Image 1 (cartoon, rainbow, N blue to C red):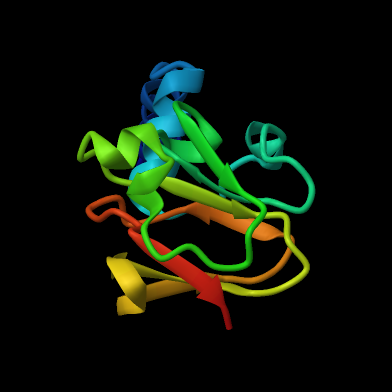
Image 2: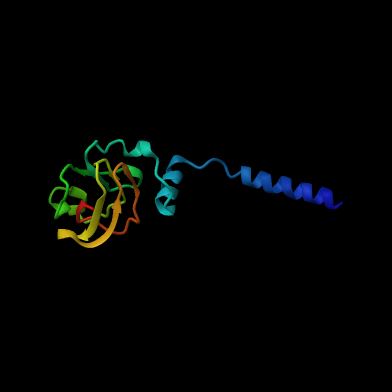
Length: 134
């Protein structure tokens, strides 16, 4: 009797688990942005080689700002979404050097850095107001 009960319970659990259906692309992007999982590299192809890019959306989506200069004292000078007060949700660094970034202008309040050739989603609750090579 225990064997039949265990098999029935397993079958019910599998049916419930499989019955939840596939996760939509929107749900996957939201989950990746909130859970800190790596973002799909294809989403960041809009960042041009030699540039440091900041995005208003998760996974390299939304408005993009990009710079070829090695350092920027005030990103709001030439980035519309930062100037509007929106946070940076993801970055990609297609330069040849590590970029460290700050929540204030003129390299104050360092918040993070990204290695050359890498990027991904950020915490999402701040702006990058300046950056320079490390």
